[in-house]
Image (cartoon, rainbow, N blue to C red):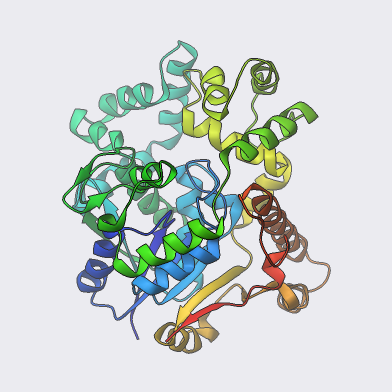
Amino acid sequence: MRAVGLITEYNPFHNGHKYHLEQSLVQSGSDVTVAVMSGHFTQRGEPALFDKWQRTRMALAAGVDVVVELPLPWACNSAPHFASGAVQALAALGVLCFCFGSEAGALEPLQQCAGLLEAHAAVIDQETAALLRRGMHYAEARAEVVTHLADEKMASLLNSPNNILGIAYLRALQRHALPLEPFTLERLGPGYHDTRVEADIASATGIRQRLKAGESVDELVPHKISHLLKEALFAGSVIDEDIYFRLVLAAILKGCNSSYLVEHGMAQRLAQACEECSDFDSLVSSVLAPQWTRTRIQRTLCHVLLGSDAEQYAEFLDCGPLYLHLLGSSKKGQAFLAATRKDRNVPLVDNYSRVYARLRRFYGKTSRKSRLAEAQLAAEIDATRLYGLLLKKPFSSGWSRDFSQDVVVVP
């Protein structure tokens, strides 16, 4: 049984995702899809519009066979870390290939760029840092360095968000020596940040904006997804941005010097911004600097809210995901997971009711990996609890929902 991996957020699932899902099966010659999906906090540094179980239901309704959560330290992080955690998770599940969308639509130029960046990583980092100190913005600095090493055509690949992620996946494959065969599809429709609609395709950003404005998205999502979206919105199972803003302010005022991603001088700037801003966008805008992109600041604020400790996160990222959380599956997906059970090199857990015993059996009671696995688990539990506070209507089953929520199963 051949499975193709998909690295996703589905925030929310839309027609572009449906195309990617269907074409991934065709291109890879697979009959099972395994999605590694961000949980409650996303790569661009925002709480997901809908919780991870709602988005799992949407994915399964659209035809995905297995949905596994990408652990928080990688899900809410820069492209290199996000990619590293995602490909390690797919390999740990016994998946042998994966397919990602890109603006390039062809693997060879992305592989060439990945090889260049990997071979000259130290030089690129040093020269980019030097240009940042001279006041150049990060994207411009990196483009100048890559142009000097190769050419403008190579540098132009790094101007598009899906290309950037794709190159990060390919670099991660090299770095971890993983036996995953990559495929890529050209991304259809508007770009990642674009809010326009082309035919029946819109970006997840555009769809979220429509939903927040109370506009219909029926033509932009599969029919089964439209029903689930309306159900979630009616139930109040959606993020309240004002609550998020106020809780972030409270976390900043409490002190965030030791938080993950808070660099020298950022904590003071955040504290000053709290006195001047009136909403989340103005908070982010007041902290912007050439070396800090908007997405970078948003991720930082997520980690300030979550209380992510910088030293602990460095340990997490060094050792990789130490368990994976199964969110949902189809019958075909269950068959795949049963067939690959002996090939997995990390525990796959459903709800957390017996998770501590599982981890201790797998890693031993006193090992470093056991300690780090439990710390990763604690970070995930806290993220779900905090996310529950951000909803217009809190979780009906309480904030510790990871312990009580069963795996979502469809026929």
